[in-house]
Length: 505
Ligand code: B12
Ligand code: SF4
Image 1 (cartoon, rainbow, N blue to C red):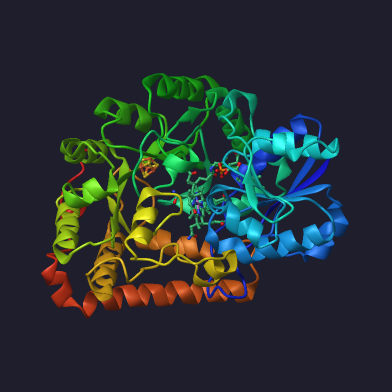
Image 2 (cartoon, rainbow, N blue to C red):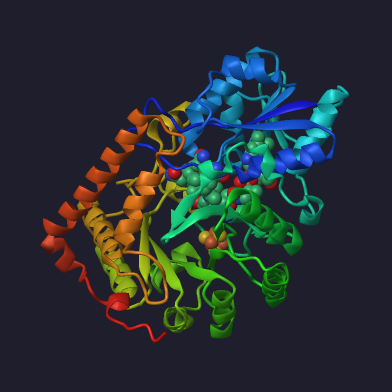
């Protein structure tokens, strides 16, 4: 079958600035799998291919179309494309992390025949094979569809697939891989790749419990290293950001990875995200020796009330020592916190600020709480009437909330949140490059990141992006400079933590 898989673009009419696209790893994996089973799957990334749907139809003449919905920022394009191909009589399936959380809304919008829930490879294969022999789609596990009366139906749940059946991803399906290169902590030519999927945790704000059912699965290390080898040789890859929710959980996984790097003599820089308590000093040393230069840790809440709400279950006693060890080894650390939790009080926010400041990471990331559908905390904010979720897909597109501050969750004033977040952001921008690391300051890296977005973009869009970044920077500085009272109230100070403590290496 001729299958067209589309990564929709951001809402170019509404959005006031430009965003970065990542390599569509989900679509690549599905297309690779379908092609290995005798189909002809192609990928179009609308972030770079600004082609009208009619031309796409003419060029590919697909028998089936798949549309990815990763977050809520590409809904309008996805809906338009879905409706267009359905009108042409082509069956359309939506899939991806966000699509899996809103199957009813997608089907009600009339832009898809199917929503594929969770992992897409085997479900797509079963679906296209069922369609090609005019079989019964109700027998395909892992699907949502609308019956003749318009009622949304779900087929049986699909078990997770054996990831060794996937094989290495076929990156030749993308025409210009270099379009996806980004810089990360000053390391350039970076792509996201992954070795494992899912996480064993059940944090209440995260959709892991729903999407991955708290099950972590690992790919064969040889498949991953084949991919990295190919990307270094043929695309000029230099840096990898492992997007695994929980990198290197077990010693055997890490050992196989390190041995594989040595055996293949692969030279690349990488970073990952992991959990406090999983890795010890000697593990970080091994990681550094094999090219790792940064580690992300989610803390999300200080010990106490907010930690119980988030259900992150962190070993708080291990955090300071882990951060110290990483710094001494020469690893950049970035710790993230969530603010604006439901029913958060001024004291809770003070606790977060104070707890964060007594730690010594290289950088902090501060996020506003975002109610992620199909998560326990989402149900809570809706039940408590702290939040009225939009009821249609197009309403979601209009109000697009990811990353925005939602005023109704807590008693703390919006301006306090803005100032606190800006303080941590400015602190990160002022942070000097840790010893043993290459490049200039974080500020220079941020500027480079904005400039790099020019790839694949029209000049008008790029100017908008520059303007957005400039005004964002200015408002960050103004928040900090013009609100000394708020800074004082929460005890925020610059120049502590990582900036004062010395790197031994
Ligand atoms: C790398 C990454 C990015 C990269 C690259 C994204 C890309 N183009 O793939 C960047 C930085 C650009 C990015 C941006 C965003 N991201 Co992001 N990202 C990730 C991350 C860390 C890994 C994704 C990945 O590649 N996984 C590996 C692949 C193989 O798995 P997968 O994508 O899930 O694909 C499988 C299934 O989902 C399904 N599937 C996927 N697509 C399709 C399509 C079809 C047709 C079908 C049938 C099935 C299907 O089958 C695939 C194979 O099994 C995840 C977290 C995580 N670890 O999953 C967050 C994550 C997906 N991102 C998220 C969000 C919110 C965003 C943004 C909206 C942030 C923002 N406000 O800008 C944007 C949206 C970008 C977009 N194009 O819409 C959320 C989504 C949560 C949700 N329920 O809404 C996640 C889960 C992070 C989180 N926990 O908050 N992201
Ligand atoms: S927030 Fe991180 S640790 Fe918690 S469940 Fe989600 S992926 Fe796992």
